Amino acid sequence: MSNSARSPLSGCAILIAAVLMLVFLIGFSIWTPLRQADEIEKFTQDKPSPVPSESIEQREDDAKALVERLETFRSQLSDDKTEARIELSADDLNLAVALFEQLEQLRGAFHVREIADEVLKIDICYQLNGRPRLTKEDEEGFVTSDPRYLVGELIATPQLGKRELALRVEDLNVEDAEVAEGFMGHFSTLRIFEQSMQDPAVGPPMAKLTRAEIDGDKLVLARIPGEAVPETVSDEEFREGGGKIAIFLGAAMLVFLILAGTLLFVGYKAQLRKIAEESDTKSGSTDA
Image (cartoon, rainbow, N blue to C red; front, top):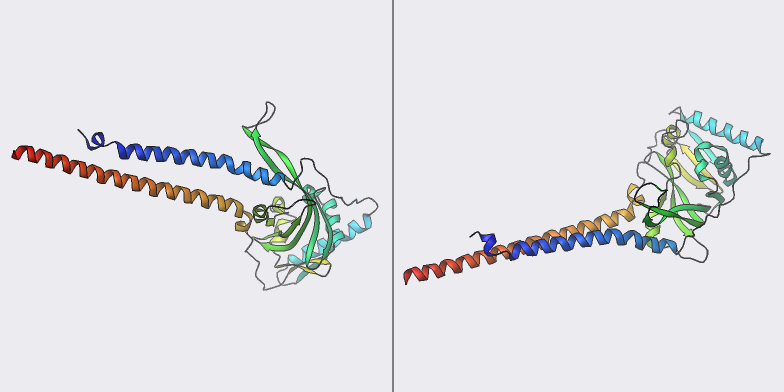
């Protein structure tokens, strides 16, 4: 008779532990998005409230002047030995959103109300994924979600890194609600140009910027010859919330492996002890 046949306890214990851990991981993967949805629903709404959009009607002269300034800035950026600098007011930024196709996704969702105190104060109507649910007959896939809308005031500072201009979220104010701290950790970087990184009119010039800062009531973008291009933005910050979940799951798997190893060791010791006892019994019978 084999050792495993004589002592199935260790194998059964490990199998039970593995099944329990698998059930836990599946349950945790289902519970986490539902819990996140509960928290998000406390400070979001199910209908959009579009923020004001700048009208370019009767502002042809302003639009033309902005385009000329941006073209001059882009031309300066093409010469690495020349200092390039442009100052943009809140009105310039809102006009750019209304004017340029590359910023179309921000229309009705992003309006710079003021630049002051070294921050941008921005009204937003930002679409988020809501509570997960099974798809309906006319929808693709197996699982989807209905949108939720984050409507409030965003306090942000400009940030450069990975050759991309982004916004670092300093604070988020929602009327009659408090934004969950965990959400703020995940929402710490807003990549407003993410979809334009490959655009030839936006991506290459943006990749040459060495400074993005607030000066008075202006957003200042600049390239200083000899100054290194920042490479520090925050894939980590942007994925912080997901990183915490990955760490937790990794810790759970480590606990499982330790538990399984302990059970295997205990079962193995029990088998050795039983074999030794049987051997002693047989030896005693032979002597007798």
